[in-house]
Length: 299
Length: 234
Image 1 (cartoon, helix red, strand yellow):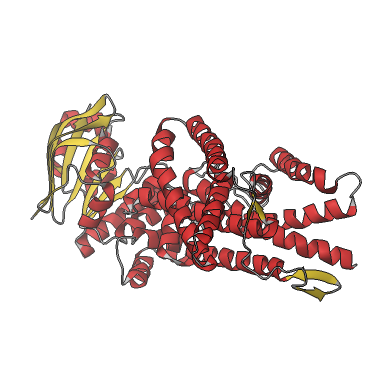
Image 2 (cartoon, chains in turn green, brown; image 1 turned 135 degrees about the horizontal axis):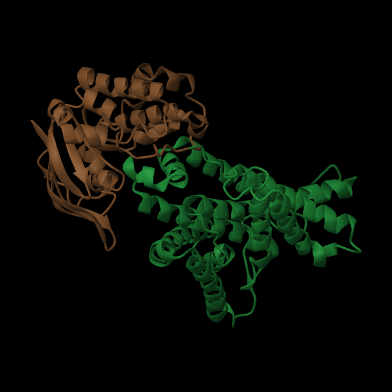
């Protein structure tokens, strides 16, 4: 039984990170209707920035804030400079740009930071071997608890932003009908740039949390997280922030349970395939995802 | 008082020039109707006036030259555009649609909302429903109420009767007429339904292939035989 609780708890912590990155995907998708394949690599790059700020002597918390702000500006800059012009001309063009961004950032990170010995990402939370409590017999490491709490708080803040603020209303309006949004005076360009900025900032935070758990920073840091996040967004529905959170947590837990209870034929190696299989099955049977809206228009 | 002066307005989509030079004026308190067949340039005129497409010529609104002004800034100056096909935010609630309509304003938004709920009681009943679940007539009411939330000086209304049952259309024109008489709202209205439009109009412009081919009071144009034949079917 304690094994079960252990899998559930570890799964929730990992899942919270997938959900954060998935929320970034959803925010971009709702705003501009594109899947940003570079979401994970942008997060990885920002995580390196956090590490770099920290290495330069900036206090860790401040380094995280700086990294997140840099991430926001970076994301907004990408939308304005790379995506906006291309999106007007072709949808496939945006796909190519985001793949190029993926490869470019990956190489750039490897070029800047790759020649150093593997960087040790400092953790935001106490992570000595005995920093844990036992609940229901399962080990709850302080770091995992911290990750889960921070991720849940961030999601809560994002939902407040969506539902309760004027900016959130503008974002939802632009997502719903960009032309009408302009007609009521919403600066749609600013809203779209901010959506990409918020997505990249969420990525920076999910990368920093994940880097703290993994410990070692490499250019491949966010690769698997991105696959899980993409699976979460697909499962939850690409236009549903709530869906992304529920699906992210479920996939985190499902992954731990599958790998833990079937170590022989799923184990650590095949659990990524479970995520990809999830994407496949969802797209086949419920393409809008569990909580997404399929496009129905009344005329 | 002159609200809107348009001279030699040209606009189109890319290389395709649809408006060949439109002249029109709207005075305060008027309901001006633009009639014309499909493809005459009615919707393009509306989109040019609200800043949704690039345009040339003279567009003067309340002493502001707005020919190069962005759509967002034009709303702030006091022109609200109800687009063809309504353009409601389908997956937002009725209330959120109205709040979005008041995006450029900062206070008295909730009280304005209640005020328009008084004029459109059916929207009040459905205030927390998603706009996409409303009937066509209700969505048209919502689109108008949303435009009014910006407290416009001039309402541009692009074919509000499109796809609506005759009774619903009549009710809608009744509301527009009332807003004009009771609130002093100035309206520039595009319509294919000439019979109904002429009843509420103070003045009429007739558009053909991007040009104004006739204009005058509603009574004058209704009396013109060739116009009656072409647009009123009698």
